[in-house]
Image (cartoon, rainbow, N blue to C red; front, side, top):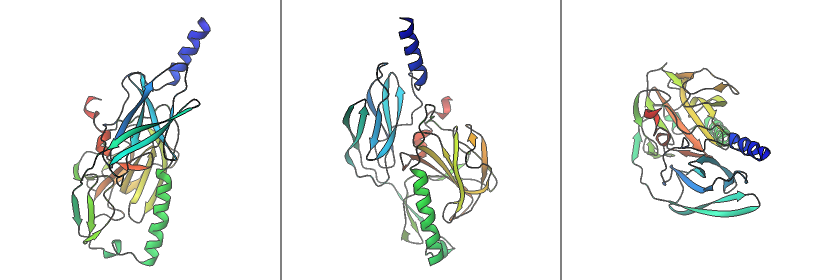
Length: 279
């Protein structure tokens, strides 16, 4: 009997919290986050694994059951979608719904037309950098301590919300896949929660950028920085100073562009701020 109890204790110590997990707000729209219940936790079974296509999905414990936390791409079509659940030798499909959302338009005038109509040299550079960023967005590190409730990286005016359909000098461009905070150059930027610095670089569009890996496909991204004060491999804690705001890359003024990636998809950062007032 003592061996059984010891085994059960060891099992539960390895799990994320079995109480109310730190989950983002659920929003079943393109660019949102959906939480899908996967069944009650059993001490006799290993945690299930969830997959969306070939990409793993973040699974955590919440109120005594397993929950998949799924990032929905901005270009995801409304309707029924599915994830695959592997539990032991059994695989099953779980269906969830995505509802339509019409994001507003944003028209931006750029004086530097070279940031809109790229030269062959800059176009080649941007293509290489976009490929690198796409690879970083797909990064996966399994861990039991992912915190999915964030604090703001800096206090300031929200100048551009997530999802805006953007036009630069009248030309349509990719939707705004982040949240802009208007800040003077040199404002301290903080890590939204604990994690490991995945990469830093200076990009043509994003300027000086930091990626922080929070585990299980959850990544935060801080762009247009003036200074980077962290390096790849650094372990950071929530609220730690990692750099300063700036106007590097394609930016019309000094600000922070903050993005959140979940299972490879850019999602609305505000969904991860739902409980910041109760921390």
